[in-house]
Length: 255
Image (cartoon, rainbow, N blue to C red):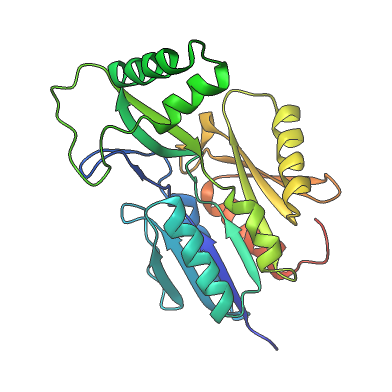
């Protein structure tokens, strides 16, 4: 019997502001670590590639090979390298990937000066030109520490690439499980949103969570949605992990 290789992303990403400050999220990797341990206990699984940041919860089973990715760019590079050199049969993409990263760092006064200069040269300034001034007004380098004496700091963010959208093109035959986290919504909205993520990114399954239950180990509620919008509900991180493992190993196109 062919033994599967599983790639799991877990925890969160951190995007640097300067060399001592960063923007991060609340992803801990706890569920990802439990999923990895459950896969490691299966005879049908050969190797597990576990990608997380340095602060994430780590699994300890022997089958698990750990890779550290701190930001979105490192995560993309790690996934691409593994997909290039390893046979990946399934992906569990539970990592909370940053939606934004720092484009440039400036001050309100610097932006105002750039816009004023543009106005003096052109005698008028369109919305597009003012936007361009903001985009290009980079006063500080991310490689340096920004002084705490700056009074009017402005950090311009840009959207990060959607890592989940890159998985199917890289792994056309793999079983792909995405994750969706919302906060304070009803079950119908949670399922609808998870299904839309599945459909848009050509996943096989999406595990939907609500932030109100994620923090508790035993009370975490997970809704695993398939391509037919059927879904199963499990309570507790261990039960959610077992359900995902069973579903992936017995995958035949749906729950």
